[in-house]
Each structure stands twice: as C-alpha cells, then as structure tokens.
Image 1 (cartoon, one colour):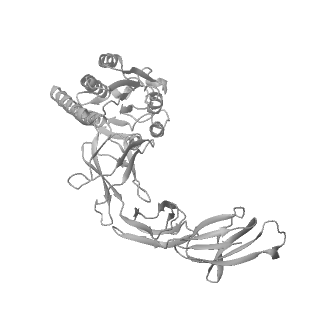
Image 2 (cartoon, helix red, strand yellow; image 1 turned 90 degrees about the horizontal axis):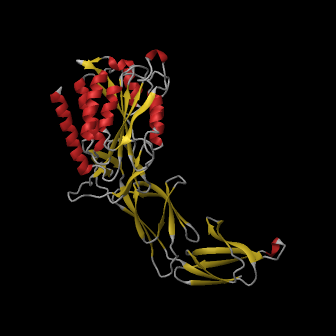
Image 3 (cartoon, helix red, strand yellow; image 1 turned 60 degrees about the vertical axis):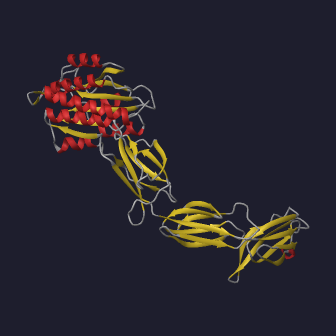
Length: 456
C-alpha cells in the first residue's frame, strides 16, 4: 500500500508541476468531492472496504494538493447521517466548505463519518450548486465517488446538465467503485466523465488521472482543411465555446507556426467544446471532447476561394456593395464592397449588386484557391430637373417588358443620380393632378462616365 500511495503522490506532484507551466494562472479552481456515505460503501474492496480505500486515498491526495496555488477543495457526503431503513433522500451535507489550507479539517471530518444510508446523488448534486461561492471566473469541478445508482428517483444526468448549462459547474468526474455493470455505466456516463474502479489499485490510478485532468490544460491544433483534406487554410478568426454552457472560451486568429503547421492552443480538458470558424459562411464543429494528456487535433472543412468585385472608370458609387447569398436561398452571407477581394467557402452563390438598377449574378461558383471576378461598367449620371412636384417611377425595358428601377423623389428640384448604362423610361404626373390621363413618360439613355440631362 505504501508503494502505491507513493506512486500516486508522485503522479499528483508531476501533474502540479505541469499546472504551474500550463495551468490557469490567476484563475481559481474549486474541487468538490461528492462522496457516497451509504451503507453499501462498507462492502469489501481488496483487503479493505470501499469506504476505507476512498478515505485513505482522499486524505493523501488532499494533503498533497494543499500547496497548489488557486486551488480550494470541499467535501459533501450523502447517505451518512440516517440509517438505510429510513430511506432519507435528503441525507446530504456539506461537511467541509471551500477554504484555503483546509486539508486538516478534511481529514478530521472523514474520520468521524460512517456509511449508513441511502444513495441520493441527484439531490446531492442539486445541493452542491450552493456549495460553490459566487465567482463567475472560477473553475468549479465536482468529483463524484459512489458504488451505487440513484435510489431516490432523481435524475443525476438532468441535474448535471442543467448545472453545466447555467455555468455553475464544469462537467463532473464520476468514479464508480466495485461495479462495472452496464446499468451503472448508463446511469452515470451522461452525468459526467465516467471511470470504473474495481480494485484499490484502479481507484488510485483513476484519482491521479482525474487530478491531472482537473489541474492541467492540454494541447490542441485546429486544422482548417481544403477540399483535398489538407490543413492549408489559415488566417481565419476562430471562436471556441464551452459546448455545455455556451460561454466563449477563446477568440483567436488561426495561424500557421514557423514549421508551416497550425499553431498550438492550450485548452481545459475538463470542458467540452464547439469551434466556430468565421469563414463566409461560417463553419461549426460538432461537440468536441479533449483527450487529456495528448495533443488533440480538431479538423474543420473550410475550403476557400476568392471573389473579386471590380468597377473601373472615374464616376463611382459611394461604397457600392454586393449582397452575397448562398445559392438558391435567401441566406445573406456578406455585403461585399466593390474593388475588394474576399474569401468564401467553395460552392455556389447568388449576388445582388446595389446599383441603379440592381444587377444580379446567379450561380457564381467559388472554387478552391481560385478567384472569381465580377467587373461592372462604371455608372453614368442622370441630372434630373423637376419643375413641379411630381409622383412617378423609372423603368428599364427588359425582354419587351418594363421593370421597375426606382421611385422618383418628386419634391427635390435638382438631383444627380448615379445609374448603370442603359435605356430607361420615366413615367410621372404632376402631384396635384387628379386624372390619370395627365400621366407622361420620357425615354432617356445613360452612358458610362457621362452626364445625361432630363427635365420633367
């Protein structure tokens, strides 16, 4: 037993060294042990009982952790104050509140507890939400140690998920003692990250692994893949979210390092993540679970090509833009200004250019590492003079039909309007007239870079 305990302490100390290097400087970590004190914990485990093994290892671990900066531990026990026959589902109590250097109180309290009663994990999880001080910046971690399934009809999974979604706790760790049944695994895998320990040696190893995961971050690279499945896309803004509570964890610009591969990030392995690449349109990952202690790779399919919008000449629209929509949908992806080059995920797009009249380009195909160019003629200018207030509109003849271009602002006597080249018809009447037959129309033509005068 002494050799095993020494190995555990060495493992914990090595993990603490990694925490100083890669951990959470300035961020408080609070670790609550949710310990099963029900009568079944007196069952044999090796040459001892499950309870005795748990108490011994927890005492050693908490004593070792006392020197870790920004770490506080607490202890909540359930099923330990009322005998089993009372079936008390509210038998749960915070025995050691969070505080710095409370390892002696932790050990003293464990000595006084004897397993007695019922397994009420759901109620204990619910109560544990109030054990953590109000501190939105802290990492709140729960480690559940139990040898039984819920006996009080509660739903530990639902409560755990609700607490994670509210940002109260991170995803819990669950250690199942002395059983590896499918029922047990199904009951707790949805509650948190589940581990099974059938022997004292397995329990010791699992405790070390959990502490290592709880106190260390892990490395990850995000591969932005092109259409050949190679990580050659870069310079894309990325947002990393906590998948359970929706909180933003990181905002970065994807970067290739000096070796030409995606640069390394450090993430908390306790969390689950969702990564959003702010491409056009944006690409999101599925829920991602880190593999602690290993270099993780997150692939995202982000093959991109470019769209170049050009307009020559002297006469310009002020900040002319094109609405870029996903092909055959009304989903607007971007409003791109002219004389700019922007990247898009490969695929088909429909463009509507906000000229007068508006220009439409459908089924524009963006291809990997290629540039699709749209160039339009520079506009001409309509110099419009209005003698009296009028009401009316401008139309363009297309396929022997008149298509609406714009309504007239009939109250402004002098107007300069940038328009695309073409032949147009203005239909109008004096605003005060009450008879349709007084409507008039005029045809005019716009040429690039020239002024067309029109009086109505």
